[in-house]
Each structure stands twice: as C-alpha cells, then as structure tokens.
Length: 65
Image 1 (cartoon, rainbow, N blue to C red):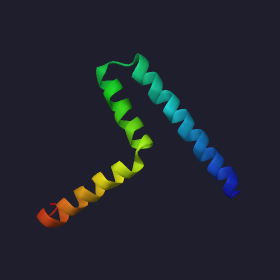
Image 2 (spheres, helix red, strand yellow; image 1 turned 90 degrees about the vertical axis):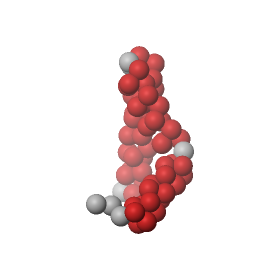
Image 3 (spheres, rainbow, N blue to C red; image 1 turned 180 degrees about the horizontal axis):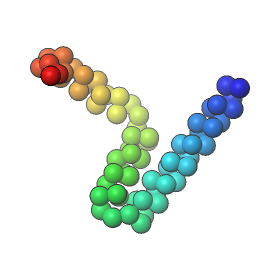
C-alpha cells in the first residue's frame, strides 16, 4: 500500500516535469518563466524551504496583517 502510494507520487512528479519541460520548449515567455520557476522548485527543494523560512521570519518581525 505505501509502496504503491510512493510509486504513484513519483509517476505524478514525472508527468509534471514532462509537462513543464514541454512548456519550456513550446510555451510563450510567461509560460516558460513560470515553468522554469516550478522546475527549479522541484530540482532544489531546500532552496524553496529556505525562502519560505525567510518569509516566515520576516512575517514574525513585521507582522502579517
């Protein structure tokens, strides 16, 4: 059951990466930029986590209203 869930998750991410690569190749400028941004998040998840943590630290200091 758990193995099947993980296999499905990996397959879903493979499909997402394929679609993003197609947008990078054939999309307009905005689609290419957004696709590259998503691919970078997939390739470097630690970088995205650091950005989220930095944003959270900023919200704590200055308040999030």
